[in-house]
Image (cartoon, rainbow, N blue to C red; front, side, top):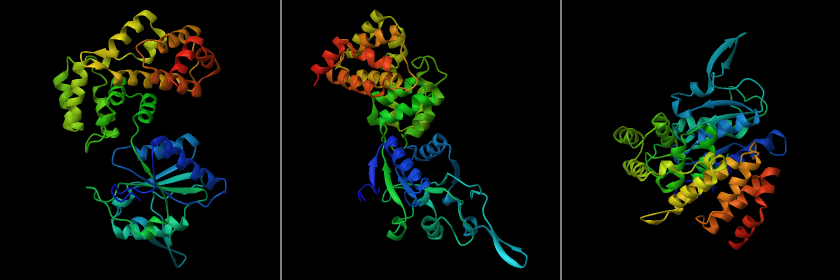
Length: 363
């Protein structure tokens, strides 16, 4: 455990945490390991809950949700006693799954529950059952938790509780978030902002969750500069003051006009070239933040499994990657990333001799 951060296990990006959890559950389903619960630690708003739901959805597994912090008494956990044929039985709570798996039971914000409730959950974590009911076959428990030792209202977990679970900690990674955001339809201006200023996603109120909420509120505003006062009010309603100020500066700077992947792939090469040259430098000097944001968004779009470029798109992509304004390290990064995810058509285009020579020069 990192005692300073209050986290447990390896610290990974959301994509790495997803792969970790998916592997643990899959091995249990296939019978190659015991069904050990997994606890995902991380700060608020980082996407832990949404990640677990996405894992279940992607694999076609059932999904059930419970928030133990809402349990006020043991009956919320065990269910209520009923008498049948002269014997007392328990009627399980309605959050308990009843159909066979594979499935994931998410115990969300696990360590915000009262200590008595947590003690009552210990048998469930160890045996997938309580004295009153049992999980159906092939159901697997995943919990989420906020760090201990911070300003969170959490109940410390003792060693007996901790050793019933496997632990992993989730950190924010702007590129992983951007890949999710593009697929989720988040406003592209917001995606560009996070990629340009990833250091701002560290505040008490500024989290991936609150940023996504804010970007949803400005999605219908075509001209952010013209609506600056309204944008500022919306930003302050969801984000830290420092982040709100940074976004207004971003709007004044004209960064929302960053070149989009669609413009690179489908626009005129000469126009794209001129815009890239303008973006690459301003009165403050070389704008590597802008170039990195453009490259990241491009590799996300082109790296999609379903993307197969036309001949014209491949030609425009190569021309963009060969542009003099791109530093060699960014060019090499993009070239390598695209080759990993490339369709056969894209891989053939990326073997362009001029582009390959420029990428080799960066080694």
